[in-house]
Image (cartoon, rainbow, N blue to C red; front, side, top):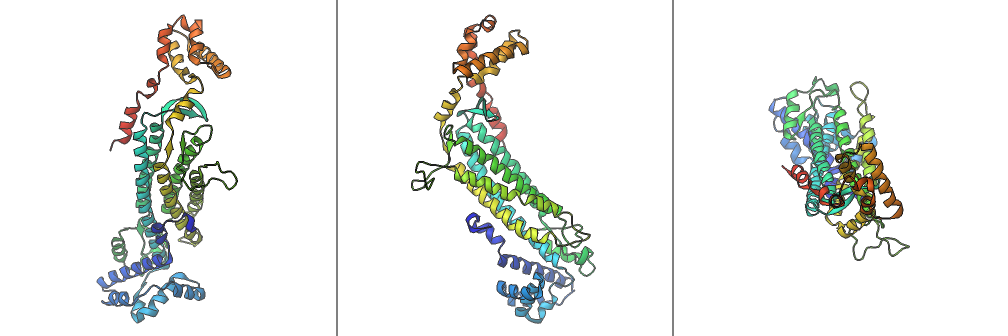
Length: 431
């Protein structure tokens, strides 16, 4: 991932130095277990640890010649550690190191993403509570439907990201496995107790059956979860973009005093952060199909998954980390315009009360189809003539013969649409 969309903490997880440091931790933990089991001489780990140095450039230079990253790594460690290094990797295969490391990196990345979601949830919750009863129009198909509150709109995103948090927790647990089982996973040359020791040391679970690799259905779940979270980010970003449109302007991204919106048009204030989030969501989702395709490998293993994971591992987690933090910041600094919300509520002259009138007519004895036709006729008159819906209803004899005008007037009440808001908030925000 390019620097523009990278945050330091998560990016560091995927840097070569950290990767090789994890490889060394795995090798030393395995050797430590073998010492305890008297498979290799005591004191090996202490001697290797005191001399071993991670030299990224040297590993790269060796790999250029041997064309094998794990061998290059082990050779580099041996150059510094001396003859004791021959006990490293005993009975192991490259995937034991690569897969255990990859899973640990995904776990570390996931834990940062959980913190990001927590920060986003705090931002959404604070704004939702503040605007619990801020009236605005609800829209379906982009068309005015019935009144809601802006707080309720935000609450839908709060609940969605709570679900995303649960999904991510589950996926982190799914990916947190360790395999030290040797070639084709039979433990022929390595004791299963070594795997158990390494897993505990790294705070991972053992992989029950690993073939020569850790099964990729685990990874497919992890990256699919990232894709779902990205889609939730995009849904929120699209909502902000729509509501910032000039003719709506119910919300607006924060715009700094020295910020410029267009190289050509000085008046422009564009929702660039939300647009950027839409793009980043596409990027994260693009990792899902390759991760699913990685599940189907040949026999006990092949390496068709390898190049894919070297890219999607860092790119999708770094991009999602950046996107979650950006969205939290957008929400925290979002300009909200309740007056424009009321203005937009009123542009259709109250036709969003049509369902209330429809229900009252059916209560008064009208067949639903007949009531629907009467109400629709008056609503379309208001729509086409820009006339108040209540006045049209109040002049319709078919209606007033059944419902007194003073009773009709009471139907046009915004509180009718907000009377259950507290219930929704209570059940949504309960622990």
